[in-house]
Length: 60
Image (cartoon, rainbow, N blue to C red):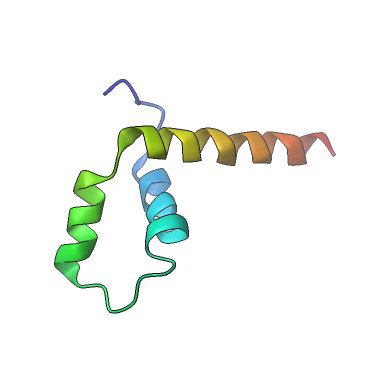
């Protein structure tokens, strides 16, 4: 999908911080479904925001 700069850890972090944070009693099938069907635009936005925040911290 043209997002070669996004790694598996970025997808995992996105799901943990955004989708699963409020989820309780997640089943393995729920987790797999979320991993396979997460919107690429959402992950891309999360990745860019996360890296922008990290860049800002480096400046201080």
